[in-house]
Image (cartoon, rainbow, N blue to C red):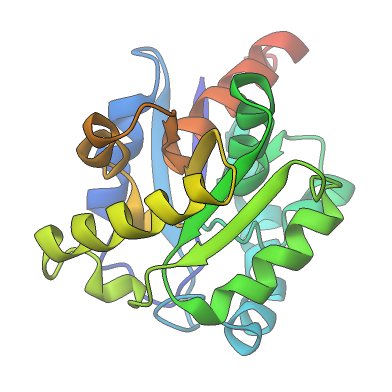
Amino acid sequence: MRILVINPVGTDEWNESDRRIYEMFASKDTHIDVVSLETGPRSIENRAAETEVLPLIVRKALELHGGYDGIIVNCCLDPAVDVIRSLIPTPAVGPCQASLALASVLGRKTGIVTVSKTAVPLFEELVLKYRMDKRVTSIRGINISVPEITADEDRTVRLLREEISLAISDGADVVLLGCTGLAGFAEKVQPFFDVPILDPVASAVKIVEDMVELGGMKDE
């Protein structure tokens, strides 16, 4: 199985590390390629950045999809995923929708903890779009930018623990990390909580693999 991961940013600085992270969660027979955009913002944390990358993501998917069995857009705002699905038959997955789907099996009420608080209104709209508003009881941000996540991992873990605790106080019995830049942090914070903490990259990989397998592999 060949999976294309589209990094919806105008830099390739994270492509190799992202490939390794996706491979951690993928099945042993799944091949992962990560590509980024030729131009665009360094991260997507507000409406302007999201709007800028939408046509660029679609163009990249249309250009490369023929060589792959599935596509993941590597951002928890799931930019352009619905457009890609309407244009090509290759299964396309967004990490947020994948995580919400798994959360609906694991619990009754879901909390989302993302990075910048400027992204919170975008997640509120996304939850409504996916008709998950009756399940999602809390959307919070740790108020750091994506590039800051790994600058001080101890600080990131501390901020995540604080916001996850508040999400649980809001009634969540499962919490998803709402940024693919937080991949790998679920296992760092899980020991502090009794409720499941979902990794968005793990969720996206497993859902797209299942979609491909259930739909049948493309002909060689």
